[in-house]
Image 1 (cartoon, rainbow, N blue to C red):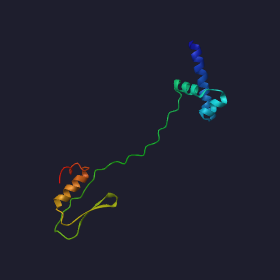
Image 2: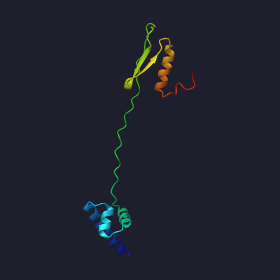
Image 3: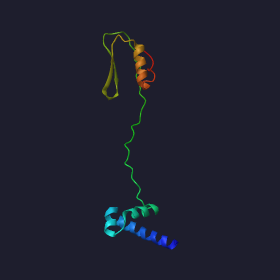
Length: 121
């Protein structure tokens, strides 16, 4: 019995090698060689000859760098609005009358993803 199984395994090993060398799809090769597609896949898997699936390469994750803010020192209040320039050409504009402590709370909330600002009014 074992020689029959080994004989079949050897025969399928040769068939699988022939299919790979032919460059044909499994379906086309099986059709032209009188083999059943299901048997081909079963033997290929059993013999450990399945091609390694190539996973599509994932785009490299952008490394997140902590946000760095410059210390803001206001020497004298002006009528000009306070502008904070962020990355990506974004800008936060606050009225000049806004207390600097409130600006600091908002900046801190932005840095912490909103956790620091939730629940405060």
